[in-house]
Length: 158
Image (cartoon, rainbow, N blue to C red; front, side):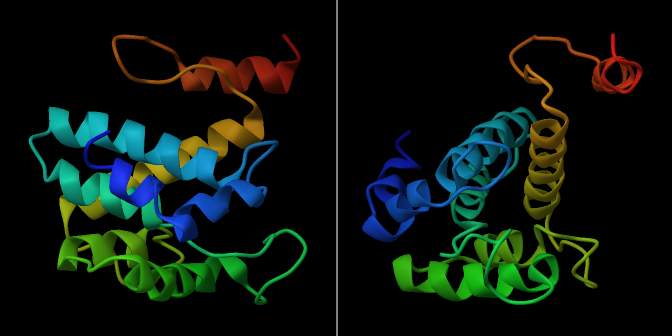
């Protein structure tokens, strides 16, 4: 929370609570979830968890309902918009910029440069898939959930 608080208190970041994102979640809910789970893995892997949390909180910093408005090919473009907006909120390290720019890899042609960027990219993908499949639970804090089993049950209606 010490890392996240200054960004979460910023009015520009707080505005994300006004935008829907995935299946009933706001964009703020989503970035907080990605930051929390990325922090867990970054800390566990002895990575720069400060850059991870800051980059994760800013990775989707855009202000439109991407399902109904915004630029064409949103998935290929919003990371550039988020980076431009993030630079208005706070100074960014090279790692934080890379996290924001590359969080949609492989839709971005250049892969993440830092392991911290890859963590946020993978966690963002995991959270998004879980939201769309409506899978409950998290893969942290000792809770063991087989995503494969959850997906299989959802497909087969069990």
